[in-house]
Length: 191
Ligand SMILES: [Zn+2]
Ligand SMILES: [Zn+2]
Image (cartoon, rainbow, N blue to C red; front, side):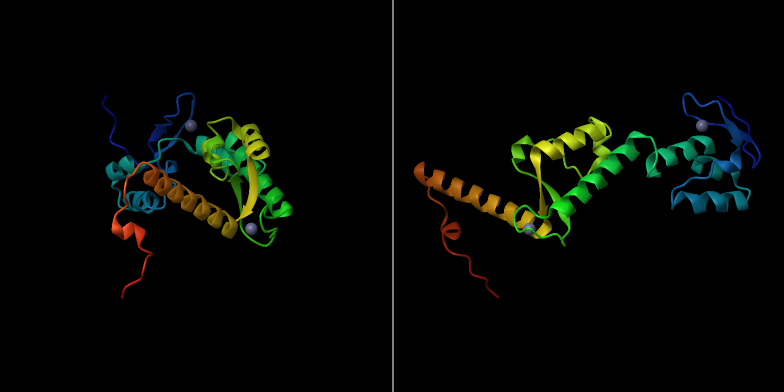
């Protein structure tokens, strides 16, 4: 389809499927830190073709709405819900303290008690917006997680890995498979 050569004041339609709005071209300023200055420079230089390539695809009205839904702590969007839920969970963990050492002054992590039950990291709240929302996050936390401080979570992961290694080595022994010499010797740091 042919389009007019863009100008600064040319009215551009929002490309959101259900949005009826159209605004002057210069309001389609990209929000991205890299594209925004390039867009502004192109406008300044009357290089409207370049600016047109860099423009945001959605109108300012849509972007105001999306920004509210995603960032406003009192927003009503599912992303705002999930973010609030994550902070509620985080605050609850901080109040309860680490399930291993009792620390309350450390960065807390939601540890899945049984890794096999894990649906997804709770801190990755963006993922949860597509997988059941805040209610699913809360159920995951209530039913499967315990608060662990970061050092305890790391040592849990380390113990888990060491146990797994011990299991494989033992089972290999039982199967009559001999480990290479280098794996049997205690590790010595050489300079
Ligand atoms: Zn729009
Ligand atoms: Zn701890």
